Image 1: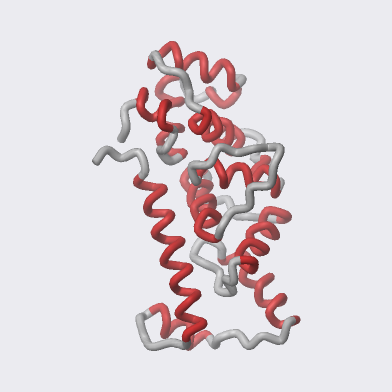
Image 2: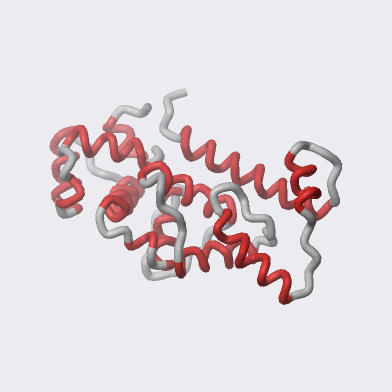
Length: 203
């Protein structure tokens, strides 16, 4: 992994790396401190200022282990998704995410809180993102959206693929063009997650 100084300067590492850093530097109760105190301690310990992206990831990491607002509020979730995808969140502007970025955000949540799942308006936000991107087969990690997608597609009188067709696609069999497109979305999403989880690893 990156050295602490580089991690704080670049901010590119996954949330688990930041969690390990603050727990080692401050202790298990770091989440109860003000962000300014956390940044100050890290700056004194490692002799480097916390970059804006690193600060955003620390902010949302702290939220995940305390208030969990980004699991309940769609606006906060969007900003969380921005941060873990390497985009500094702008709380004064819309910053919609793609399906790939959405899957990365879910993977980041699972890193810290393995048993958590999307609920309420955050689940609705995720579903709307998938439909906007033309994804009607929920990628792994977002299975909770499928029942909502199914209702939407049924109301639009769209024929969904059979279970056999999907299973055939997943095992590499020949599939219709539209199912193939869904699997391409899945592949891009998996690649995005792999990149996120390996970010900050020294080459």
